[in-house]
Amino acid sequence: MSPIELAERLHARDAVLLAGRLLLSLIFVHEGLELATHFEGAQKAMAALGVGTPLLLATIALQLGAGLSVALGILARLGAIGLGLFCLMTAGLFHTNFASQNELLHFEKDLAIAGGMFILALSGAGGLSLDRVLIGGMKGRTGAGTNIDTTATPGEPHLSTGATSLPV
Image 1 (cartoon, rainbow, N blue to C red):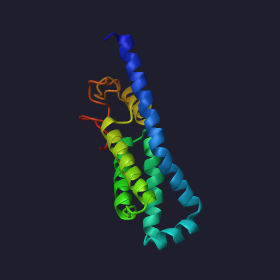
Image 2 (image 1 turned 90 degrees about the horizontal axis):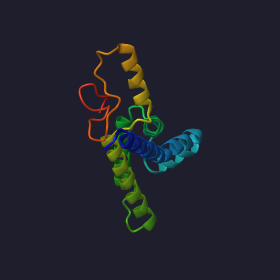
Image 3 (image 1 turned 120 degrees about the horizontal axis):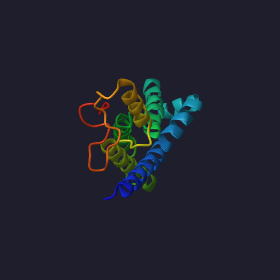
């Protein structure tokens, strides 16, 4: 493979990862903002489901924090794992009335989103991410002795794997 073909593939991979991160995170950032801006109504609705205020606050924090983490590509693997687990728990706790077609659909969507998040956790955020920018800045500041790879190709370990990995 020529260097030009390799560069084209890397940019396409990074663009697809960015689009996927944005699509996956949109629902969480949107719902987190909705819960936060309509807190009293959300509090009443959650109380009817047996969810107290501390868990509602934790849900808002997770949706906004991990959602932005995935969208921006900063600690995206950690955010993706958190949101994937959140989706599995939501499916198992709130969407198990399979007699209702709507509940079954929500259950299946939660499972699908969890799957996407776990795939993202394995693949990493890609080159179009704040992690990549920050790692590149650290590499420039620390000099040539740093062993951080910011030019990983599809066959090589990604920047967030190996000895100098980001969390998770």
